[in-house]
Amino acid sequence: MASLRLPAQLVTRGTLNHHNSSPSSSSSSSGRLSWRRSLTPDNSIPTFPSSSSSSLNRKSSAVVPVTCSAGAVNLAPGTPIRPTSILVVGATGTLGRQIVRRALDEGYDVRCLVRPRPAPADFLRDWGATVVNADLSKPETIPATLVGIHTVIDCATGRPEEPIKTVDWEGKVALIQCAKAMGIQKYVFYSIHNCDKHPEVPLMEIKYCTEKFLQESGLNHITIRLCGFMQGLIGQYAVPILEEKSVWGTDAPTRVAYMDTQDIARLTLIALRNDKINGKLLTFAGPRAWTTQEVITLCERLAGQDANVTTVPVSVLRVTRQLTRFFQWTNDVADRLAFTEVLSSDTVFSVPMTETNSLLGVDQKDMVTLEKYLQDYFSNILKKLKDLKAQSKQSDIYF
Image 1: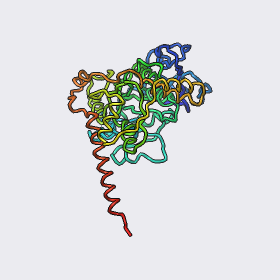
Image 2: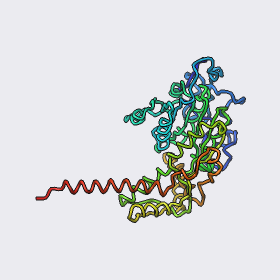
Image 3: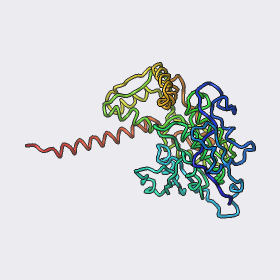
Image 4: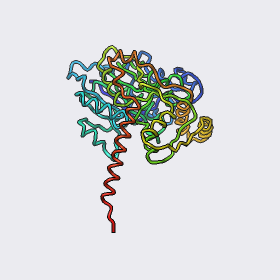
C-alpha cells in the first residue's frame, strides 16, 4: 500500500467572511469558504505535503492541498473490510452516542473517534464499542483511526469555546481527504436544514460548503440535514422550569420540527443499508414544528408549574452581534449569535417526511412526538423527585 505522509497542521484554503457573496465561488478574492479550491482539478485524491514543508502556516488563509497515492484507494487484493465495520466521529455527543448505541444493538462493529480527555469515555467501552483517541484539528492523528473501517458516520462538531472553523471546516476537510485516501466505502455527514439559504451565518455556510466538498471528493456518501434535537430542549427549557430559573426565549415565531436523536439514529442505519440512497441529500424532521412559546407552554403543563420567561427581542440579538464584531476576541460569540438570529427569525425548520419515509420504508407513526418525549421525561424526573422527597422525610430526626 502506498505511503501516506501527513503534516503537523492542515490549513484550509477557503477563509470565512460574512459578506453576502456566494459560498460556491472559487475565487480567493471573495473571502468565502471554497470547496472547489480544496480539491484537485481531476477530482482525484488530494495530497498531503511533507510535514517538513515550510509553507504550512496556521494563520494562512490558503488550503494546503493534501497528497496521497491513488493506489491506496484500491484495497484489493487483501483482507476484505466488512460492511459492518463503522467509525463514529463525535461519539460522545448528543447524536453520536445514540448512533453508537443503535449500531451496537444492530450488530455493527463500532469504533469511536474521541478526543483525548481527562475523563475517558468509559460508557462507550461498557456498551461494547472500541474507543480510539484522535483530534480533527490534528490531521496526523486521523489516518490510523480509519484502518479497517468500511463506513464513517460523522457526528462531530466543535466545542463552544473553539473557533467554529477549527473542527467544523478545517477538521472536516482533513477527515474527508483522509477517508478518500484510505479507501473508505461510505461517508455519512450531518448538516443543517436550510444551510444553503443562510450564507451570512458562519456555521450554516460551513455546513453547506462541507456538503459540496464531500460531494466533489468522489466518496460514496449520504448527507443528512437535521432541523433540531428534542434532547436540547431539556437543558434549555425543562430543567430551568423545574428549578424555577429563568427560561430564555425570543419574540420571533420561528418553528422547529424537533426530532428524537434515537429516531435519527434508527433512520440513519436504515439509510446506510439502502444502496438506492447513496449520494442523496436527505432531510430529517419531526412530526410537527413548534414555536418557542409552544414548547414552553407544553413544559409548564407537564411540570405543573409556571415558567419564569425572559424574552429577548430579535433586535437586541442583532445589535449584540454587531457590537461583538468590533473585537477580535468576541468574533466567535458573534458567529454563534448569527445562528441564534436565524433561529429567532420568521422561518420554519421543517420539511414533509412523506417521500423520505417511503424511501426508507418507515412509518411516520413510529416517530416519537415532542409531547411523548417530554411527557416521559417529566414523568420520570418528577417521580424521582417525589421518591427523593419521601426518603428525605424518612431520614428526618426529631428531638
